[in-house]
Amino acid sequence: MTSIQELIPVLQTAIGPVILISGVGLLLLSMTNRLSRVIDRARNLLAISESQAGPSKQKTLAQIDILWSQAKLIRLSILFAAVSLLCAALLIIILFITALFGIEDAWLLSIIFIACLGSLIASLIVFITDINRSLSAFKVELYGYETKEG
Image 1 (tube, rainbow, N blue to C red):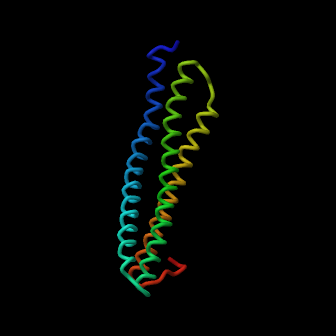
Image 2: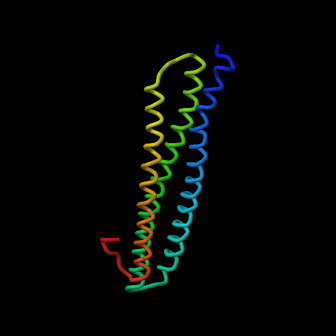
């Protein structure tokens, strides 16, 4: 069995993933709030579109299509962020298991840490893509069309 003195360095090592969990949790809060706003905006536009006709209805429907794609991007971003959190939590658990049982497996810890940060990077890339899509929706609202250059 491992002594308290031997576990203290493990606790110190686990601080990094714990801070990562806190930071990604705040990102998740931001992403879920953004998803809620996109869904609310799409519902409002859908209600408005029912009373419209002609070009204004097409413009509203184009905005709804963009909002739908944004919602899917945000959902994907949330998924990657959640995977990152799961990997960070798993990393902490494995740190303690390896310390308690004296297992030396740096490869496993490294792979989980890389997966954690890789998922976080993927989440942020998808989130940035969503931000760019919101500019497309705004352009449709302003000018009534969507261009390929964003």
